[in-house]
Image 1 (cartoon, one colour):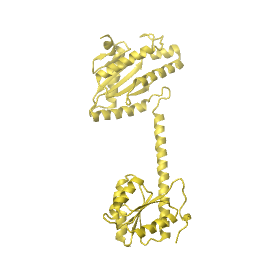
Image 2 (cartoon, one colour):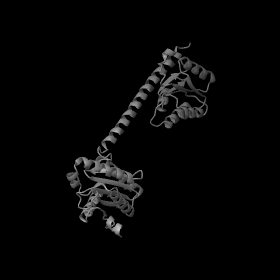
Image 3 (tube, one colour):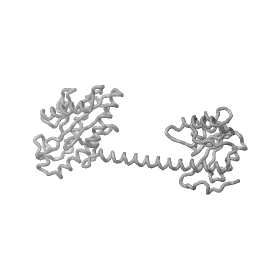
Image 4 (tube, one colour):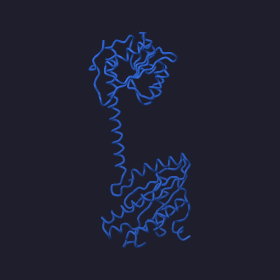
Length: 338
């Protein structure tokens, strides 16, 4: 007796598809007919496990009606393979069998099934099971959608939290996380990692003489320059705090770090941002400390920061407008004049 399509909830936004796995053609045709009478237009048919598994992986039906007795591999095996094929996902599987005993039910659930119907299947029972499974599937879809939305919102929130409002560079919080992850990556790949701490020379004089509005504009200009020189995808320019910036340069050896620093200092001088109150030069200049290492188990973000900070102090002590590296025992002025 045909059933009204009203017995299944209408959901035009989310079409519902069913895979019927049954080796007896007459039984399969009857099931397909009942499904179509119930308002399900997308029905896939398979008579054996191999065909069914191919349909399952390629077409991803919303529900599977699975006969236990199949030629070759049985339905229990097929259910296990379907579960293996969808890690982290879930497709309802309803077993079909002419046998009605507790052992069959137990084996079906253990194999990955969700419910059990005894053949011949009564149409009203079939539709009731379909309604229940579709309700569960719709609920799961809503939960997955909500979870995705929350994940995206968290990503956006984290991105906002990690961005310095004035310069648009990654802030101190983001810097700490990036440096830690790059140390782990460099340790794993046995690659050199360079950290640079940079300080705008006599920036307090700049603010005192030209005002904080001009000072903020200067910081924004320097930030744009730093972003431009960090050309490789993983090179990271950050605002460490105040007029201090930090650069994380993965896969950069000592010699490459000094070359990069010399080019950075020269680029800033070429931009010629006026600094009339600087005792170093008439334009804005940078002092920087460089540390480079292939991280080992003893390397930490704190130890690299301490080393870079000591090098920055040495650069300032030697006259500013230069980068200094303890590892190379030289600064960019020596390179410039060497």
